[in-house]
Length: 285
Image 1 (spheres, rainbow, N blue to C red):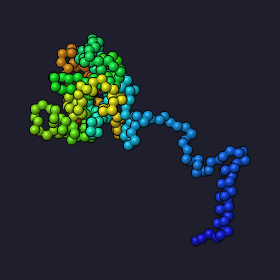
Image 2 (cartoon, one colour):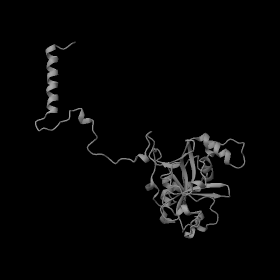
Image 3 (cartoon, one colour):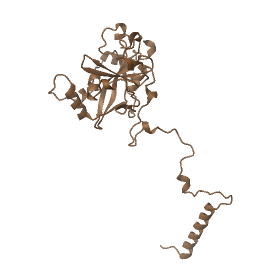
Image 4 (spheres, rainbow, N blue to C red):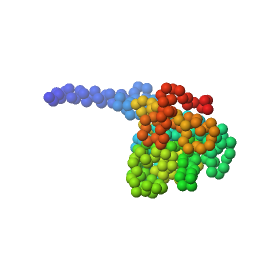
């Protein structure tokens, strides 16, 4: 039903008077209208995230230098669940969730390349700032990727990933670089379930040595998605470290229990983890 003309005119007049009061208040200042009150930024702004460490597409923030600045054992555990990203030259992004790591504690660790505090051109990345990559060649044909942590000569070896994106590109890279069984198609779980396989699948070679994982444009780390519950972490002996005395058995390898992407499962360590018999803190080493 159409309102009477007199009522409509009265409403228009009332709105005009209100508008005039907003524009010419008695104290001479301009008063914002009720709508304008909601247009500006809030009175108190929370901490803002650097554009460099966030993505316009809403991707998780890139983890910066502060993340890597912690002792090797805690960093090895903190890596679990985070997303490693590798951008190839053609723009393809390969992504994987870290499920297995090993900690190397520096000069005291008989299994570390920095044992005794020795520095060489080969292991220099281990003595650089936290977050520096240390990539080395083993058996004359395979690469392994480590990330330096807090403490001279300390680092974390990345042992296995759960592939999340770019699996076909990973498969092609592994097929081109792996030795033997060239005709057999690789299963998804075989793509990154080992330190050298991981490097093959992500096209990581010696050219990545001493790069900064917090700033590099071709490889970086992103915050992993939130989990409904904290995953159980197994602390086990490291793999293939040879003659390192008592350090051979120290529980410095960490992996997500039950993950099918882990390179080597240690059933005894898993039982110890369940009963709480095995300690994981650095003070016990």
